[in-house]
Amino acid sequence: MKINEMKELLDANIVCCEENLGREVYSACGCDLMSDVLAYVKDQAVLLTGLINPQVIRTAVMMDMVCVVFVRSKTPTEEMVTLARDNGIVVMCTDKRLYEACGIIYSNGLAGNKVKS
Image (cartoon, rainbow, N blue to C red; front, side):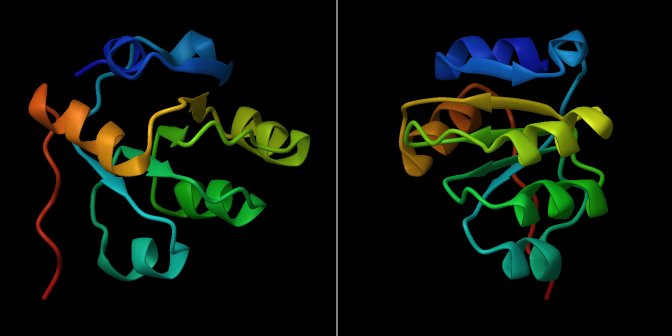
């Protein structure tokens, strides 16, 4: 799935790095605990979260993610946007809840990833 397709499915607003909307993504995860993202996520391209904290972008950078979607109408801070822009990470916001947003992209073909044992 391309990021721009996910944007349309989630009726999301792009915050930064719109030049990367044509990138293909193959998996996603929805989580508000960045420690869980670091511990259990592997080879994820998209992070969906409601957590507004610079650590979200730092985690995305560490995990080589290319897109962060903020749910529940959350808006990232300018510090977060700058960090994302510096690392080429697409940031978008949707008014959908985490469960709904994950369900929409999953049911449209974007798979999750098996949790590490």
